[in-house]
Length: 168
Image (cartoon, rainbow, N blue to C red):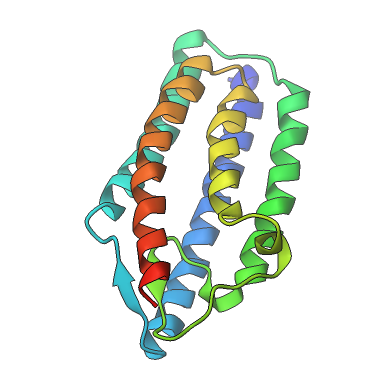
């Protein structure tokens, strides 16, 4: 059991971080809806939730099937850098950050923080996380399979989001 401890601590940390993000998103969603936000892309959102749920399950299953793995500290450091970048990204959007596509009518596209430099920094972070998180423990199958699935999902998601921003 001790050899599994670093993985359990790591995956537990990542899951708790995701739950905190969902809590922030729920709080922001209440504020956004109070301010007249309209939701878009509802039809694909359950697939995003399923993708991320199966991502975690895949990591756990792959890790157990491999009988454990040694921590790759290079990927661990990359993960910590991604956390800092994610915090910057979320804080730049403030109450407008969400896991759903919610838009307050007549609101403008925020162009501060990383949004000054990238159109979709949050999606860039998610792409990197889908690769980096499993690679902390050398979980190649999860990294490859979910990178492909995530790229398909993000192509749908980004098209939907871009359409929303072009409408106004």
